[in-house]
Image (tube, rainbow, N blue to C red; front, side):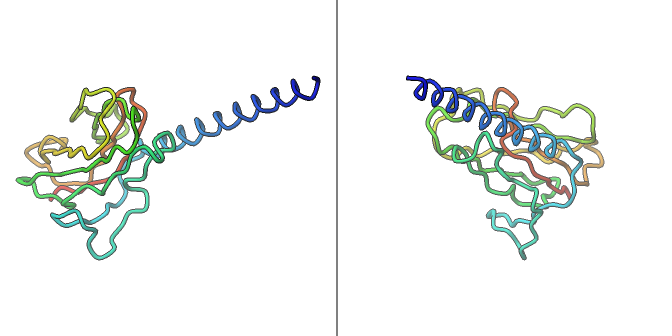
Length: 167
């Protein structure tokens, strides 16, 4: 009887430690997401990476969403001011993602809201997010530059992030 109770305690402690490390990993990922943009993954208008120009930090999936969501790099990147930027988010799990929001980080100030899908949970399948580059830019009259996009769920847990360039 004593061994059975001890094994239950060990199991609970292991689950708590695993949960804490998962939270720590997500917290670290989110801290990285809120850094200033640094490089970008170059893509064509069909979403294919061009010349293997890949920013290794761009478009990774956060620890909370591993196996539940996938993302393709934003395209085209760089995007022209009169173009349209697309991000494809694939929800792969049932009841896996509660809504989606997109923010732009211009600097270390509060992120600016760009887009929201209110569905909770999001249905499994492809969600295409289309953004106007002029809405992303800090100054519409002079939009050229490098910007960090952050995609969260409806509870503001970071799913992914990446940098885009407006030309």
